[in-house]
Length: 68
Image 1 (cartoon, rainbow, N blue to C red):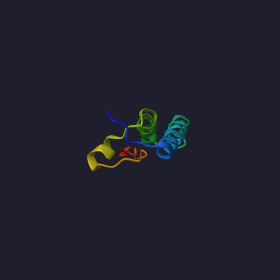
Image 2 (cartoon, rainbow, N blue to C red; image 1 turned 90 degrees about the horizontal axis):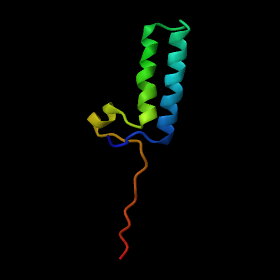
Image 3 (cartoon, rainbow, N blue to C red; image 1 turned 180 degrees about the vertical axis):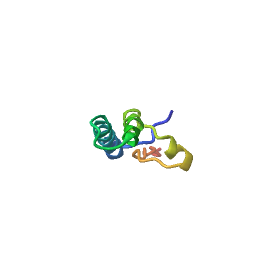
């Protein structure tokens, strides 16, 4: 798996995942809040399958050194 989730995107996914899981565990929102497990996992592993399908990436672009 090639990383395709960058720094800010990764942090937002981790925070959102934890919040959704906490809200679902305390009964504040319905069972759909357990979707936070997937959101948290995509942030933890820096990989999003949907990004792969659409050819997207939020990782910084690596510059190639073309000096002679």
